[in-house]
Image (cartoon, rainbow, N blue to C red; front, side, top):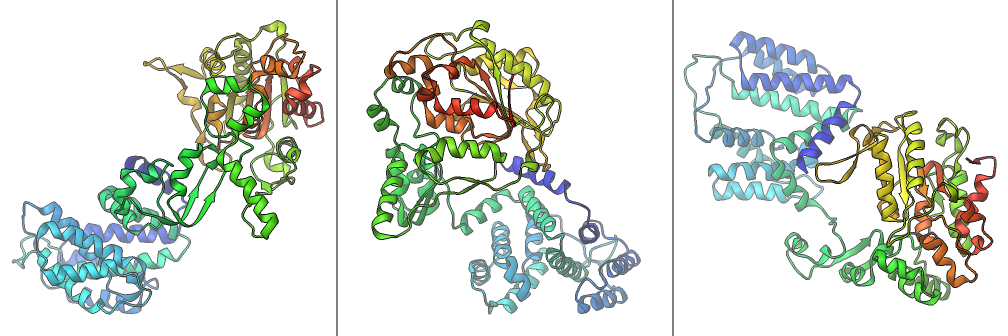
Length: 577
């Protein structure tokens, strides 16, 4: 985890433009580090002080600039370092002591964190007495806004510790770092750092510090995050697990506010666990029009053949039941308990309007407006210019669905792979998703992608996207997933520029009654799944399948959503291939 975070920070910092403030700070830090690690002769040090003075002139306090000039004229003694077995620990402790904040402004920024870091570094060296430990502990615990009363004591302790950690004076035989000059350099560097933090380069400076701490003290970073966080995250079941108990110090810990994301997907028993931890308020976030609480595929299959009453009982999540109850309570007492988002920023306005009308307004909910304009979703894909919705017809005579516990249709997988191969190289910034309603069809898609070189089989026999197609930089320059293949469940919460939707079902069954619709359409009748599948795209949604399935006489009753999409494809912004 730490390694990936370090790599991510390094990549982010590499993307920052080179600003003068950052360049000056980096040069100053390098010169200070060079002096500390490999000090020069007295004359070389005087030259270095002059260079630092010129580099920081007008950018730091006047008294610090004056001190630089003063020290340039009064270089006197050199100091050597003792050779100790714990030199590495001593060096880290010395660095931590130098970072102790003793000025009010600096301490208000991160003084408590630096004090705790120093205490943690010094304890293994056993050079602190009880009062010194207590002073650092008090500084580390300080959370008030006003200036702490112990800064003078802290400054005195810092000086004492520097004397202990920097070895005794010896006759000069080789160039030695002068602790007074070193301390002055650190003050200049800290002052310069604070100035940079308040400039345009401030974000880069903070990230650089964070990166340095992650590299040299990952345990300390983890400990500080745990000590200072006011937000804890866990899955529903983990919210009452051992890890939570370790962090909170109690198996009966409660929280003022509990927020449950994707609450519509949690089954009732799981959802009750975090809800029972709330002291003042519970906020459930979810969409009962999308995937409900997770059901096994066999149960989903049985639901497709059940009565409407049974379907509604098993499919309705606790989230949906509570949402309906809260709406009813609002009508009686006027207290607002529910919030429904009224704008979408993911997809082209035409596609957003289709999703709004088909899945939300149909049930009496208000329209969802577009938060972005059409021009932001131009894709210029060959064969799809000015198109946001398309249906690639793969007729029954091209190949039927294959029956089994999970349905599949190889010809659709091949057609999707062929089309994707043509489109994915046109603009490497675009991202693609391939969604199927059946796991067996996902396998067929993988097979087809392997044949065109977009996917491959690992040594363990698993499918994976070929390395060239796994990630890309999108139009905003962010590294994102370039291609994903899976069932609807794998796409909950995801979004891609272009989405292929494999219909899979293709048969000549003629259902004479509503009870027989599931035999013909199966999972295509599950509105929640269709809602997720048809709302993952940003720029273009391409449905691939047998068009006759939505032209059948009973289709408007059985698969209303797909019929609506077919109608959209017949308009000027759509096409049928």
